[in-house]
Structure formats: C-alpha cells, structure tokens
Amino acid sequence: MKTAVITGASSGLGREFVRQFYSVFPEIERVWLIARRTDRLQELAEQLEEKGISTLALPLDLCDTMSFTAYQEHLVEEQPEIALLVNNAGCGYLGNIGEIDTVSQTRMIDLNLRALTAITNLSVPYMDKGSRILNVSSIASFCPTPRMTVYSATKAYVSAYTIGAAEELKAKGITVTAVCPGPMATEFLAVGHVVDSRPFELLPYCDQVQVAGGALRAARAGQTISTPRLFYKFYRLLAKLTPAILMVKLTKT
Image 1 (cartoon, rainbow, N blue to C red):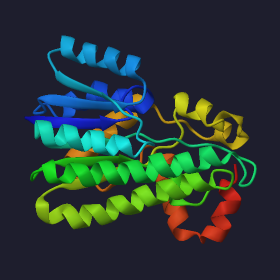
Image 2 (cartoon, helix red, strand yellow):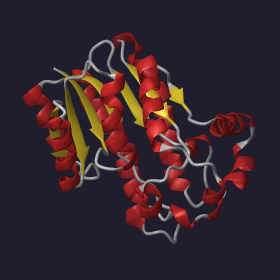
Image 3 (tube, rainbow, N blue to C red):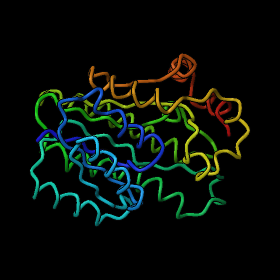
Image 4 (cartoon, helix red, strand yellow):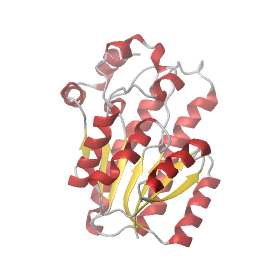
C-alpha cells in the first residue's frame, strides 16, 4: 500500500503538509502521522479518516531514541511502500551560547539532525523507484546565524544531507528535496522566542500554505533545493557569493 509518512504532523507547516499531500500525490493510499501531541494527532487522523484516507497516528517524541525502535517495529509489522517521506519535525531557539539553556541547544540537534537522519535511514528500505523524500530546511542553512547558531548549523546539515542523499539514492530512483523557507507565522516562532528578535520583524514572511504546496510540487518534480519567495532566492545567491565571515554581520539576530 502506497504510504506517506509525515513527521511533526500535528501543527504548523506539518499540518499543512497533511492537508495538501493528497492533491499532489493522489496515488497515496495511507498516511502515517508522527508527532508528540496525541490529542492533536488523533483529531487530525479522524479528519482524514472522514475523508476516506486510511491513517495511522503514531504519537512519538522523536527526541527520544526509543521512538526510532517503535517506528521500526511499525515498519516491520505493516511493510508499507513509502511513496513520500516528509521530514518536517524540527525546532529552533533564539539565544546566546552560554546563556540559553543546554536542553534547548541539544534538543535542536536531537530533533533537527538525529531524528531526520534516523527516520530517513529506517524508511529508505521501504521505498521503491519513484519514491520522494522531502526535508524541511531553512534560509538559516545558507549562512551561520548568530544567536541562532545551533539552529542554523542544524539546518545547514539538513541541506547538505539532502544534496548528498539525492546523489546517493539516484540509482534507486528515489529523489530527495529540501525546502528552505523564511519565517512563517506558526507556533515555531513563539516557542523558540524568535519573535523577540527585531530583525525577524523586518523580514518578509512566507505563507505556510504556499510553502507546503510549493514544497510538495518541488518534491514531485524531483527538485533538490526549493526556496520560496524571490527575496530568499536572492539571499541564497548572496550567501553563495559572500564570505561567511562577512555574511554573519548581516544575519545577526
């Protein structure tokens, strides 16, 4: 059964991926929803079931390595044909090194790096030619961002991992895409205290509905890096052409 797996599915951009995946990938017959918040996840699963979409809700905390064992057990039991994997789960926190709490710093590494890598590695054996992997990166991946140093480093990993994985999995007919949006009006900004940063007030915001739809279409087309909005396409080019030691002066939050 052709299956979509979406992490961080219960809110924000993840919830939007859940709403839109079927319009871009109508061949998908079942969706696995992964997130921490059981109540939201169950509500979302019920909404999909009412629309006739077979759904499996997996309330997993991907910062806990035991969640990978649970996910693997479901894979072994159900033997899905994963046609689409959306690695959306992630977090970001604003603060200076040495002042921000260590739990927040390491949580970004656990969720943005370790979880994405583990879920992808466990999923690929269940993918066939034509399967798609969609990773949520960020414009922060283009350049180190002071006061969001760990976050920008984790997203640089996501983008680099995507490019490498796309080449590595090409022989299997599996494509890998990273979407690199700017800030969006979701819970992410408030939870990470990013709303306290004045530069973020000046940046043009991305619309999560458009980001999700555009990212899914980019994945369908096999595009490796997708950057919404002309402003951020220019920023990506600027970051490529400008030494990082100068760019960090511009990106300071």
